[in-house]
Length: 114
Image 1 (cartoon, one colour):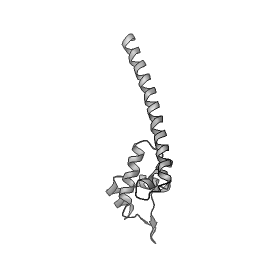
Image 2 (spheres, one colour; image 1 turned 30 degrees about the horizontal axis):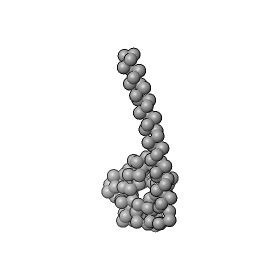
Image 3 (tube, one colour; image 1 turned 135 degrees about the horizontal axis):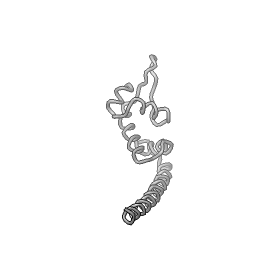
Image 4 (cartoon, helix red, strand yellow; image 1 turned 180 degrees about the horizontal axis):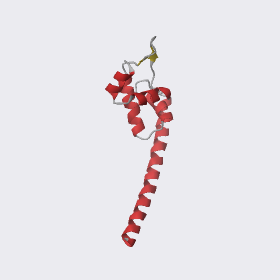
């Protein structure tokens, strides 16, 4: 399928699809006329990429995680990726706790000085 159709079916912009391809997250073949030709499973791949990016994963990690999510599982690689994802989750929790503390401090300041 061409990039316009993939954009329509996946909900991702053409610009995003080009970026995913540039980052090595999405592959295509070039036709003789220069048009990109994406495989049939590209829609599911793009939806997975978008979900992982929405979770806050950086593209470098998405590139590593993607094979574990689209049926190309490497039993030796995926557990290591799970550890990296757990570390990222823990980092997000730490940041969230820090932001909650700041929010509480600001609320207290407003309560006592407002």
